[in-house]
Image (cartoon, rainbow, N blue to C red; front, side, top):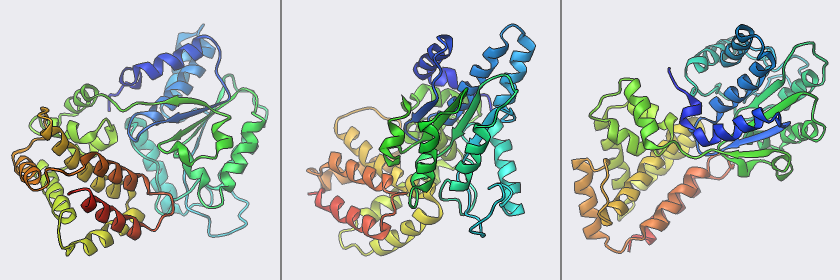
Length: 375
């Protein structure tokens, strides 16, 4: 997959490049922003360029170091991610050594895929938090003296999951941030920085990532030879999220249209006859497939957003004939609907995943409140 994160997020890279050029690399950074905007890719790129600078006098060695980072194989690169809890409470082994053989094999496959696809997530079945054992092992390694030339780079994926449970992992990391190891940079990557402890937030330099612009996504999809007929709808639905765009592009447009129509019909059901199934199905999804749950609500949110754009007479590639008929019908039936508030309600439901909320109640309240804002 040919993807240049520097070109895709030029303002972010400009800021990071200045930090490197001025030799002002700090001990801790927070890369935050919406999903699918290249935060993980940029963290790897940042570390790769930092370490290639140590060998500027030898272009070949510099390039080799850069490539080892990009291939996730450099000895100075440490990756921290969610793992399933060990079946043994007091397991002295490394967290990776405690994995089942099938999980370890899957993890190696995912890491291999991530080398070529920067938007590949490193997620194992049953992995819902960053384990304290991962942070303890990290601490041991970071404070060891090393003869390696370069700077240790730690990338913590889905860093908000440090706060899962009793936040013991977050507190363990905080101790490292309070006494930063020499010649080390820790990069926390998250879609939900508000879930991190304030004490951790205060010890990081914040780098905020905006959504990708539509042209960036469109060019990328063209390079991947996505069907030209569907590309405009895919870009519109993606909402600046490249991971979303890749996922959407793999599905037939007809299936997406059907899903949007089905979701809108359930939500607008005056008698609520279809609500029970919607609530049960999506509550289960929120536990078993968070991405699909959020994607369903994202499709619904886009439908309401584009009804609003349609009312304002804005041009939009989302206006598929089948959707357009539904939008016209909606505007006739609900001319006073508060579409702005409905958008906020759905956004809150999307963000509710991971907060240990009772999702059935959350979805019930969502449907009730949407109906209150239709009249």
